[in-house]
Structure formats: C-alpha cells, structure tokens
Image (cartoon, rainbow, N blue to C red; front, side, top):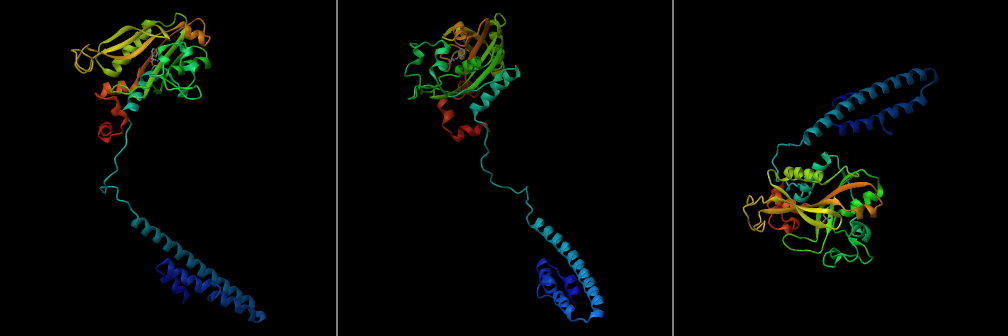
Length: 328
Ligand code: PHE
C-alpha cells in the first residue's frame, strides 16, 4: 500500500506525508521493527532480514521519487521566475562622465601616451609647497587674501597644482616626467571663475641642457592640436614666479575663426596655457643641481568650455540635467 502511495505522489508535500507515515516515529516501518522483540528466537533472523530488505526497497523507491519531484519543482520555479529581458521599461536616467572629468581624461590620455606619470598631492597645502618653494616670496601679490583661501591652522587650500611638482622633486631624483591633475581653489566667482576648479600641471626635469624651450613649444603645440584640431598656436612672453622665461599660450579663436568676437575680446586669440623653463630658484628650493626643466599648467574647465562652447563656467557646477544630459 505504501509502495503505491510513493509512486503516485505528485508533489513533494504529498511525498513528505507518506515519508512520515512510513519512516516517522509513529510510522509503519517503525511499528514493524517494534514487533521484532516479540518474534520467537529461531524466526528472529529471517524476520529482521525481511524487514531490512523491505526498508531498503522502500527507501530506494522514496529516494528516486524525491529526486524526480525535486527536479520537477526546480523546473517549475525556473519557468515561473524567467525574466523577459526584451520587456520595455521606463529606465532611470543613465549617468555619464561629467564634461570636466571627460576633458581631464582626454588631457591625461595625451600625456600618459608620452610617458608622463600621473601624480597626486594634498588639497590642503602648506606655505612652503604652495608658494615659497615655487619662488613666490612672502610679499608676492598672488598670496593676497583675495586669491587664497587660508586655513585657521596656517595651511592653504592649494591655489594651483604646482605644489605637487615640489613634492615629487623632494621625493625622487631626476629625471622627472609628470603631470598633476586635480582640484584647486581661489577666491573668485564670475562667468569665467569658480572658487574650485581643476588644473593639469606638467613638469619635465632632466640633466642640464637636455630640455629647452623648443621641446616645450613642440609638445604643447602638438597637445593643443590634439585637443582643438586645426588651430593656430602662439607663444606670448609672460611672467610666472616659478618659470623663466615664461609664456602664455594662445590658440586662434575657435568661435569666430580668429575674426574677432566677444569671447576672444575681439583679439582673435584665446589664452589656454601658462608655461616656461623652470626657474633656478625652484631647483634650489628642492636641492636639485645640474638640471634643466620645463613646466606648464592649464585650467580644465576652460578647456571643457571651449571644447563644448559652454558660455558660463558656473554652469558646469550647477548640476542642471539639461546641460549634463547633453554629455551622455
Ligand atoms: N601654476 C600656474 C597657475 O596656476 C600655471 C603654470 C604652471 C604656469 C607651470 C607655468 C608653469 O597659474
């Protein structure tokens, strides 16, 4: 009877009931085994063998049925939980790299391909790394309150990524070939300035005489063509405390094809980079001897604005999805 019950069971629940009827504490099999003690001596052995054989058969029958029903159940579950990936759904808006970060990545890619290492430094700097070692003496106007955020403990929020070059030079011996991308801070707020923005600074240091202004000019011209395509590039004499000679680099205005417009202040040129040959005083501050080098620095937001023709720098930081969605 119980054999039949096992073979007709069509669900795990029914099979489980049968199992309890059979092998449970009050089950049929258990009851049979209890009879064993009343069986007279000579028949005991045969009786016990018969019971064991029956038990083994039923157990086998049960195990087979169990596997069969279990497999069936998994099959059913899989069918019930199938996900139709072709179903239409209103997806949440997809994210994308912020245009400033995308521009930063594009800049970094160029220099990494030319074997520059990518270096990092703290955003809260000290006077030595941010100013002093960069030949910005105590009375230099760039230190004035209107430019620099000072911390109460005497630290400064770095006003450029140039302190990273000082850290790198103090940490290693030349040759150096590095860029330092990152956030910088200045007290400024108008259509072309925000109190936080990003720079990429570059530094190359080699044995004296191994690098010169021509190398600097060549790499930056090539870089600007990589970023902006067919533009004119011009180097204009300028001043930075940490480079001598120094230059600012302009590209021909990409908005008016150098005819003169509001964005290029009717000059036909857009300023995009600062650069120069590293001032000997900087090498003195880090105790480097018999070396020469060049350095350059640029503002990433400015590059992003020019590349994407964004009229107001502040738009980059407002998180307005109407702007951001255009960069997906
Ligand atoms: N650190 C300069 C700035 O923030 C940029 C610069 C870097 C200029 C390296 C020349 C050389 O304005």
